[in-house]
Amino acid sequence: RRKFPRLKDDIFVFCRLGSISSDGFKAITCEISGGGLMFETDRDIPNQSELELEMYQPMDCDKRVIFSISTLAKVKWTRKIEKDNFEQGENKYRVGIEFLEPKEGDRKIVSNYVERRLLEK
Image (cartoon, rainbow, N blue to C red; front, side, top):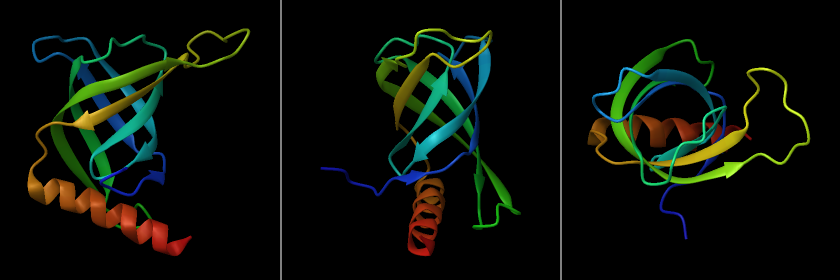
């Protein structure tokens, strides 16, 4: 069903909702693939929303070399995290996004990283 293999990994991303919004926020991925990623946030982001993403993608498995990738993405789903009580600032939602316009070279960097990390496991 999936076009790209997924990797559970924590990679820093900076997101901006819409192309003119100055309302940016930081997130850490939970999963990543060549086609998209999933992160947790305290924001309820509507499905089909467009995000501008800047990912700080590791080039090597030790995460010593980082490459900045900017792309547009679309929210495919948002799910509330099931929990009775949340601490102040704690993430309340999981958000799955699909990359819309990655440069082919950038998609290859992400895909190669995921494949290398999966082979290590």
